[in-house]
Image (tube, rainbow, N blue to C red; front, top):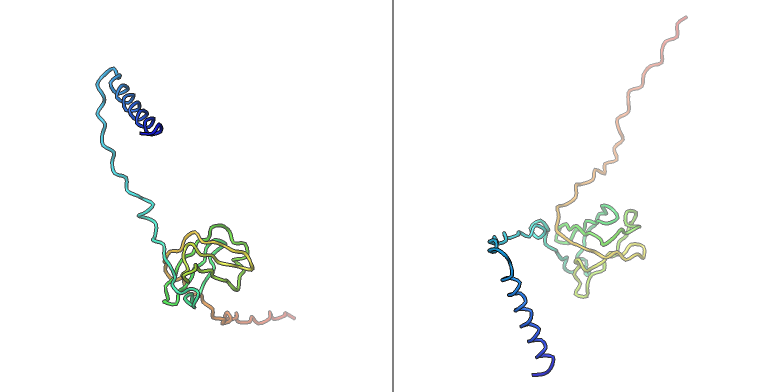
Amino acid sequence: MTGSQTLSIVSLAGALSLAAWAASATDGPAAPVAPAAPVAPAAASQKSPEEQIPFANRGGIWNWQVIDNKTVLIESRARKWYKATLFGNCINLSFAQELEFESNPSGTFDKFSAIRVRGQRCPLVSLVETTAPPKKNNSKKPAPAAAPTPPAAASP
């Protein structure tokens, strides 16, 4: 055995004997220890699984809608909607008319990808499937005009 292996074995033996001595040095009987209750991973059960948009570099992204400076809804060619959460605020995102989607080398768009807006690179933190946003009412019908009121009659 080498010197470092001997030192490790001696250290381990010393630590075990110290633990045994500490356990026997208590004045009274040891209190029974209840087994720990299993903890359910709350974050894992509430968090949606991360998704990927395949062929993002070949027209796999069909549409997008900006929610705020940290959130973009993206529609894939398969007509599924995804919520992309950005790492931080993307300053020009709310005013963007064009977005560039940077996919990974395999061509998929996922949580390791980024969105580029006016030269600013905005990396993603999460990409999860979501429901489609509500449809906007783009009808440009004018509001019904109020009926004109006749002028008041002048008294002589």
